[in-house]
Amino acid sequence: MFIRSSDQLPSVTALKRFPVPRNFNVSTESRIERGKTWHAPAGATRVKKFEIYRYDPDSGQNPRIDTYEVDLDTCGPMVLDALITIKNEIDSTLTFRRSCREGVCGSCSMNIDGTNWLACTRFISDTAEPATIYPLNHLRVIKDLVPDLTQLFAQYSLIEPWLQTTTPEPEKERLQSPEDRGKVDGFYECILCFCCTSGCPSHWWNGDRFLGPAVLLQSYRWLVDSRDEAAGDRLDDLEDPFRLYRCHTILNCTRTCPKQLNPGKAIAAIKKMIVQRRS
Amino acid sequence: MAHDKRPLSPDIQIYRPQLTSVLSISHRVTGIALSVGALLLVSWLLAAAAGPQAYSSVQGFMRSWLGLLLMFGWTFSLFFHLCNGIRHLVWDAGYGFELGTIYASGWTVVAASTALTVAAWFSSFVVMG
Image 1 (spheres, helix red, strand yellow):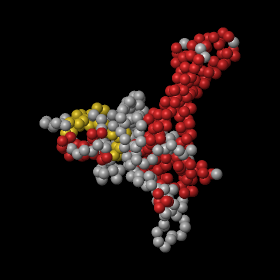
Image 2 (cartoon, rainbow over the protein chains, first blue to last red; image 1 turned 135 degrees about the vertical axis):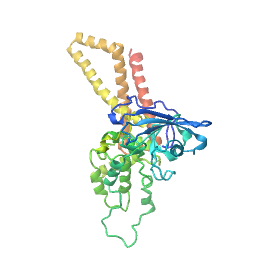
Image 3 (cartoon, rainbow over the protein chains, first blue to last red; image 1 turned 90 degrees about the horizontal axis):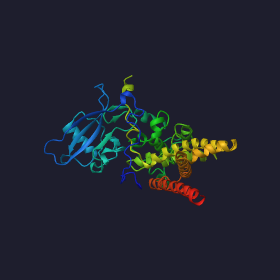
Image 4 (cartoon, chains in turn blue, orange; image 1 turned 90 degrees about the vertical axis):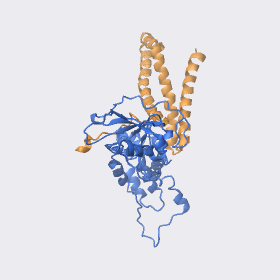
């Protein structure tokens, strides 16, 4: 009910999904079919079910939902451990991204029980029965849980995410006071897992032109950096009905960020900077 | 192009409704309801201007259960859109973005708009008769 931190799970779930038809606005090739069930080995005592989105580009078939029964006695505690167990012991064709297994690389972001999170930092014990796992939302799927992030990284490169200066280079490094350094706290920690952007309804429907929460948060990270001297140009690039202002303060981003950052606040701060430089 | 044949991962069909998204879509829905309801109000005024016969037929509809239901929905839409509109104004000023505050203000909007709707109908039926 009252959520104070994005890692907090809801105590009650009143509505599992919006009351729209399953195939609402879904093109033919994206329709999800029923897949098969992989039963737990005989003698398994603690069985947990995972319903996982599968898509094989080579089969020519539509995506499907496969159900896997995992013996928790032979599996680590996190959702990523379950995926690795499935791949190692049950079905080696299951495909997903993973790297650090400790929430710093942002590779294993996916939709777990209806919201986006990192598989490596979500406990299996905190998931529903059966747990449902989909790839990040509204992205073209390359295979299984691997979505195509090309568009999102192209949007990231659009904001030129590096330090830009016009003043002559100092003899040593560009200095920053602890106070100025503090201004990028809460923004520089973004790992670009795109949980927020792919959970943003505005980005679902205007993602071709709206930059989305992750990229706008990154943009703000450079706008507040005291060493950066391109704030004016950066704001010029953002002042656009779509790039920035398609944000309608829905705030699913802040709710879902696995690093507990606040993209909604960053976007509001950018909007404020644009107003302030006019006066 | 092979790219176009790739399926699009599901979004609204599977994303769990959050207080944030539910209040956001409700703001839009109530906004539309207010516009449609405004037409209804205007038809009432037009009927009043047209004469007693036209007025009594519209009044009859407004007093029917369907008319009452529509008006109840309209008043709730009005109060919800008002309260949530204030919440959006505060956000536009740059305040209230901590997640705890987002949830507190969200539930406050739900409680306040419900209370205002009940109070409006209570006063119109019980107090005014």
